[in-house]
Image 1 (spheres, helix red, strand yellow):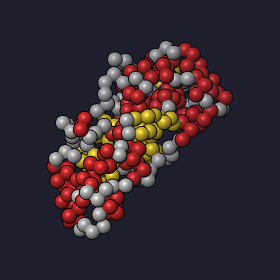
Image 2: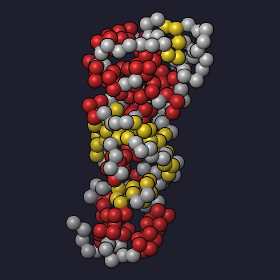
Image 3: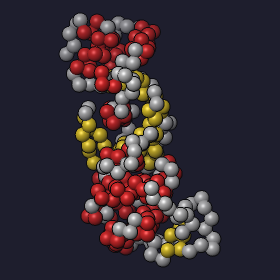
Image 4: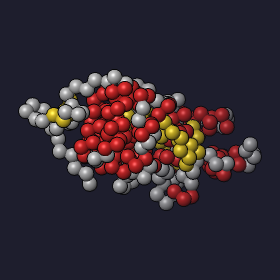
Length: 272
């Protein structure tokens, strides 16, 4: 409960939220806490707090409180508020791609973009004070392929190492191409457990993505046991491989095709 003094203005109310361990709020919550304030008064108060770098608007009607440790830059890492944001938007989600890989120690450098996978309809990317959140649209957020990770402010949904690997291949154009994906996979594969390469994973994944995943693991990373596991599970699930290009935008005629994975080798993958 807020005391009367703390609730006397929005600035104090925001500070009180922070002392209670809450780092986000919505305009709807403000209107409930201050029913007597006009819309203009609320907007002015929020603008003043934003100008002082005490809060940041990361989505219309949703704000992040800037704690003292982040006050100098006025930037709060999305990891600390993404779960609350997606709850506000009433969206299933998971942290994905390079952002997920970094949580498994598989990113060479901190990603410049924070990746979130969520269901349709598509969400536009957001850019606030140098922090970019990119939303990738998917048909469903596969709960059985996600894991929960603890942050300073609570828990977030993250793709498992196995799903992260699949997404790096499937959405490689968003991270700089297959060479970048393979570079990250080299370290990420240390976190992949063979028993988690199972029918649940492969039946959720596009067959072409599985072929490219197997090809990279086998021919580029030379991880024989993992490659055997991927191939074995695909066969068990009775998946049929058809000739596909390694890179969809490159030419494919007159080039060799890997017999095992049925991947046309039309691109050179280089690992950093």
